Length: 130
Image (tube, rainbow, N blue to C red):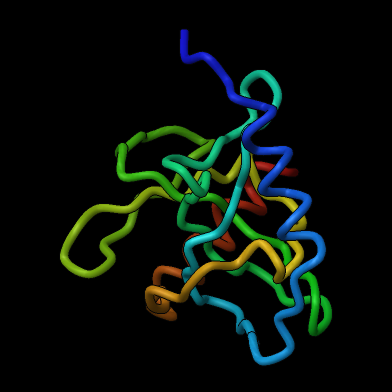
């Protein structure tokens, strides 16, 4: 089992909380590397020194927060995941891990999901939560 470094994440989280990202704007369908952090149990974690993971912006709620879906490169075929092609590779939305994010967690944008794939992700998410 992976040993979690909550102390390291907590120090980064304090810095992120006090950061000011006035010039960062997100839009639905965008994919950003996001500081996911070190989380509890089976909640999805970020990776590397900055605890980063790509996240799909599902729905922007305000200039500061959005509903996001973490992504993985591991292809899984079940009700909890939806795989699609992004930049010539398979990317999988972890639908069961959808959550609210503050834009302060964002590191950099890597692109946008196609409108067709985004509509399919929406359909799969609705199926999952009904």
